[in-house]
Length: 100
Image 1 (spheres, helix red, strand yellow):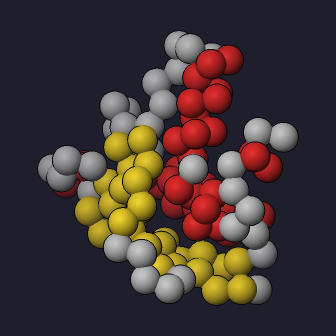
Image 2: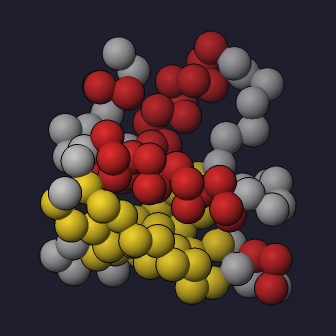
């Protein structure tokens, strides 16, 4: 039910992931939730910024985004274009999608 409440489309859902994390944080206050931000929207493409206190989770983000695409009957391509592990402030992914 929580997942159904935050977005009816792939871009809307991704933009509202922080809302889902906020709801989960109310149930599990000890969790350290990451922050997601969307920028550079252009048609079926955007940049997804991933900010977390924890390191090494970029591969999980890629899987998460691809899985969300499947939820909306889309094929998602995810390319990491900035990396926290390479010294950047946070991870950034270029996300694009097309309908199955």
